[in-house]
Image 1 (spheres, rainbow, N blue to C red):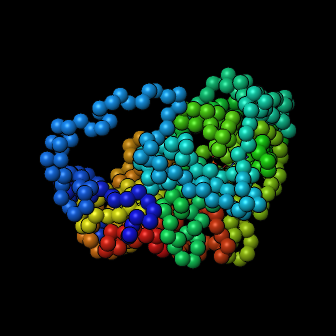
Image 2 (cartoon, protein in one colour):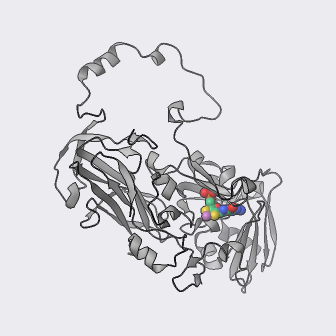
Image 3 (cartoon, rainbow, N blue to C red):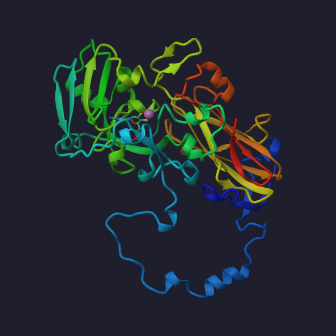
Length: 435
Ligand SMILES: Nc1nc2c(c(=O)[nH]1)N[C@H]1C(S)=C(S)[C@@H](COP(=O)(O)O)O[C@H]1N2
Ligand SMILES: [Mo]
């Protein structure tokens, strides 16, 4: 059956809208227009009132017996069991630990990723670290080399920051010649957003006494590949966080338990998980992940090194592939935007393949380096349309088109893809990936 192969199902249609002022082609309406009377039942009829009466009159099965008792650690409803990450393995059975999983962006609302759905990227699996035995060592060009236990780190004053982490390889499927027909999350879900809590790295470095010749810091993880990266000292002084908590609870093992580095806005690879060593050095150490990986292939055959900051980006999550539209009518377009430069300043939406654009409404509480949710009301006339979103950040950087982005790089480029996403809606209301 169409539209049921994957994905979350039917997108809510609204019966009417107050003040339906058109603001761009393809049926885009003023962001101030109010959508009224959600219709979710298919043929276009609102729920008959008798259904509601029945519901009020007779008790439902779950009202007739006591519910189950409290539990020590909660789980989502069993009716939400389809809301999971999609896992992948880079090299199959020879190295099962080298892989990752995509956050199902199309199934989530708001801007915080639940801990169990945070995307994963592991180069050699998730180590099973005993926090009592784990240590973080600061050494190299410092006056006092220091060794911290997790308990010791927990005694420092902590700060919280809401930040996305995005893999530099996120959205790589869209560098394929043909648009892959998978979900939004399976294209763009190597990004997630959490509130991270921990100790500013600058505070620990102050205690260690950084020498004047220290210009870079090498962060290394305690996993089976000892994954490590060189980080310029300025970023550390700015906002690097030694994170212990994720959305209020201890980090998940997948996110680096018991301690990870967080570099807000910078490519995910540098936010080293299972952090156990920080070495102050004069120059980058040319690690595997800053030479053979995470560099940008240029058209002339050279490779660009050290693209740290993630580009400005956005994607419409509702509707997206897997969401079916229920015939002509009013819908609320919703999506996520983010930028490695800080704040998202503006998101424009197009419903006519980029010919005309209208500014979406941005959530008011948006933080720099975090997800910003945007929305815009839309009246679909039932014909084929191309939906797009285009974000601009506080530095007035604008998301490129796919053609512009492809032109900048060599044929083998897979990293740092942040081009405008086009979703094609056909006359049946099915959504697919399009270039
Ligand atoms: N020690 C270590 N740190 C690591 C990795 C790893 O494999 N080992 N993967 C990196 C990559 S490539 C990314 S994109 C992010 C992913 O973080 P997450 O798994 O918490 O989403 O962690 C980075 N930190
Ligand atoms: Mo990554």
